[in-house]
Length: 120
Image 1 (cartoon, one colour):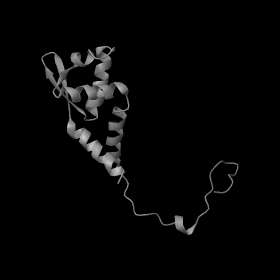
Image 2 (tube, rainbow, N blue to C red):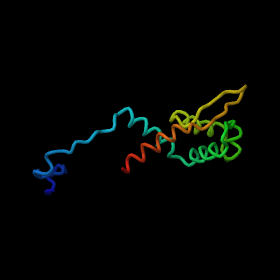
Image 3 (cartoon, one colour):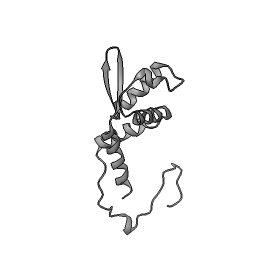
């Protein structure tokens, strides 16, 4: 790199080795958006704790059962459940006046597989 002129734009000197980019494939925009939503959904401690509870339960839990584990009100728990559901990590089933949530293991497996591909 050379010194920056007054406009603060970096100046890169061209060399023969940098002019031919390697043949790589960019992640398709639709998949990048999907993975970003998944990672964003996992980016909150309460949502990680909810996933952990549902994984231990092995079956669907009512939103009121999930709420009992937190010092948060039902609307806040529902907000976090919505994030996880929209990211594909949860399935919801309405039973009477209550909604029951269960883990979607295939969504977690898909994300895990994609993350493992990054390391190979």
